[in-house]
Amino acid sequence: MKPAQTTTARLTLLLLLSMSLTLSAQNMIGFNGNYAGAVTAYLNPACIANSKVMLDINLLTFGVHLQNNYYGIPKKDYKPFSILQSGFDPSTISANTKNAGIPFLYTKVQLHMPSLMYAKGKRAYGFHLSGRIEASAKNLPADLMYYYNSSLSSSGAAGNTPGETHVTPRFHAALAMWEELGFTYAQSIIDNGSRKLTVGGTANLLFGNLAFYANGKNVEYTYDDAGNISFTNADAAYGGSSISKGVSGFGLGINLGAEYCIGDATINANEKSGYFHYKYRVGAALLDIGGMRFSGGQNATVNTLDADLSSGSNPVQKSKAMSMYLPTALSLHFDYNLNDRFYVGATFLHNLRFTSAQIRRPTVLSVTPRYEKKWFEVSMPLSLYEWKTPRIGLETRLWFFVIGSEKLSWLLGINDFSGLDIYFSFRFFLPKKLNDAGKPLFK
Image 1: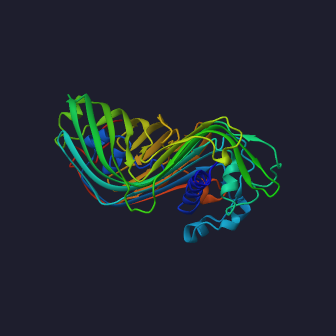
Image 2: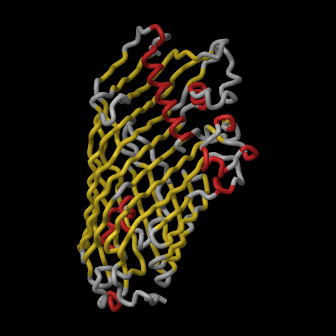
Image 3: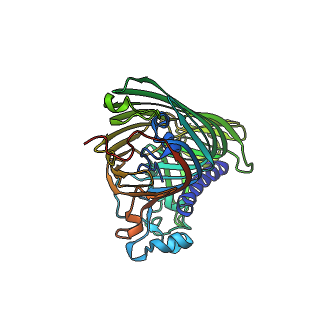
């Protein structure tokens, strides 16, 4: 590739890995009960219309998530509480040579700053200000990842035969950082005591800080005797925004959802707060529809069969602006009320990636038993990550403080380290005055 192209590709990989391993919660699945308030809108905006909370003021919510099989920390070198205190020690990070599956990486850092939710009668309103950083990679050959990030670990880059031609499969890598200023509205459109249907939507103004992506297939490359790499053929598209500005991209994002509840008409006939006492509830939502346009960015495509990309003789098509699309996903949820204290919920999140300039959100299926009271809650999400990695989590709410993780194993140090997940929240809320709130309504 031309020097500028190589620099762009290298910068993309360096930012993706350094962000993942130094910043180092995806969905906060455990934080989704009837007292969760405004945060439930992130999985389905319709949920805020049937909350046990009248007023919810989120002071600060922070979550961080990482899962990958490129890099890891051997169990003997892994000290969870040292990481919490001082971060990762680069000398302990090594190439993951045990996992023979498809190479992948996903990381997410989310910061929800002061936000507000108010629910009364059939309607609910929400306002939020959030910051997000997300990155994903799939099928990017591990040796390329190790080569461009040799400062993290040199063990994975060794052993490449000089002169041997490597050909990539179809691969993807992307990252983005942005802020959101959003408004949520939800309303019940059917409520006859035994059935309730609510719909809701969130509109977000997006302020992009940076974005990069790279996609390709049949990219050929070789190593020389000194371990340097050269590319000899490519079918690829890549792009990146300028990182010299605070905000260089603008856009719009939308979440749309609906929720359907089934309950007892006799019980709900006496409820004046607007809350619907359900036995079952199901919901569906489309999340993160939209994207950002970066005026200072650039797209490029390489599609050639010439033998030498390094010569600069190959046509490269470029544009002076780029678009980056949000990590669109389908969200489905189900909740079963055992006795107004104990619940069992299920959540399914599936990525809907439709373009090359888009982060790929992982697919997660979870079942979550939950015990819930006004000032105390505990839940244990049991999830399957990308259809192959089982995880056990734990979330606890005491008064106005919430802390949880969808992956407890990283805190226990029982395996080699390959990822983490943790979130916490400080908030203030006023609960609704429910009819017979102190009694289980379902037995």
